Length: 133
Image (cartoon, rainbow, N blue to C red; front, top):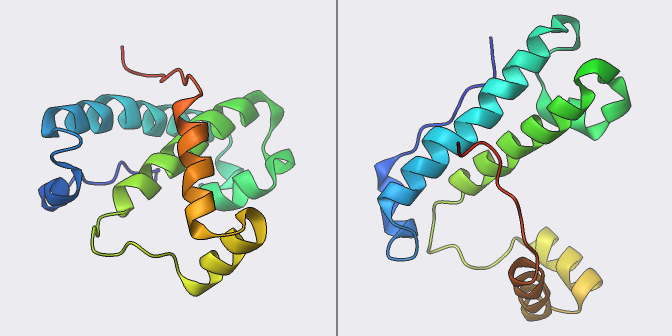
């Protein structure tokens, strides 16, 4: 079995629009995210003995053979990041869980301080997006 590209469900349109149009989401999913999936599957195929549990592998990258390590880190991490994003589909759920809220408060002082720090970080860094060509 291989890493699978999650479905891009149209029911999520209520969450994206009007902020991100459907065409952009399809481009990002069908090209960009799909490239991560194809690349990590190609890397993992070279060492089937390590399995396909990306969370386990990325939690201890030293267990990944060196000839595929960077490909698994980049593409496996990119896939997990995008899968997480696609899994956030409930615009009604706006508050963090109690456990996450406690961690955010301990780290940032409050949820609002976290949002400010996150927004600052997100809007002051230039990210090169791979796989769009």
